[in-house]
Amino acid sequence: MTVEIVEFESRVLRDNPLGDPHVRRTPVYLPPSYPKGRYPVYYMLTGFTGFGEMMIQRAAWSESLPERLDRLIREKEMGEAIVVMPDCFTRLGGSQYLNSSATGRYEDHVVRELVPYVDSRYRTTGRRAVMGKSSGGYGAMVLGMRHPD
Image (cartoon, rainbow, N blue to C red; front, side, top):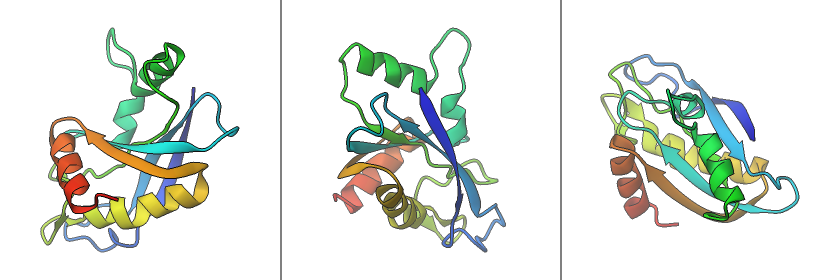
């Protein structure tokens, strides 16, 4: 299992209304065969009060997200992919992954900053998907509808 932690300096989150950090630690899961090929990218959004690094930690009696991905790939339940876990946490608990005058431009952070960064730094196919849990599911639905590409 390979997970890189990217220290991403966001221009759109700089000077956000809450004064939250604009440098975000973003885990990036790389599949077992990386760097031999090119891979689709899945953006995994956490629920309210969550942030990307929480998904790489184990909880009691359960797999971490990277452990689960390795197992699903090994069991041929899913194809190999790069999985990005954005940090869109705010001091209020979350951002709903939207642009907001109250919390900041988190939709732009994911869509206009992270997606191009990941495509330029990693061996991607240009195919991508967004998914999430709880508030992250809401964010995935909204981002998917607003940005179908």
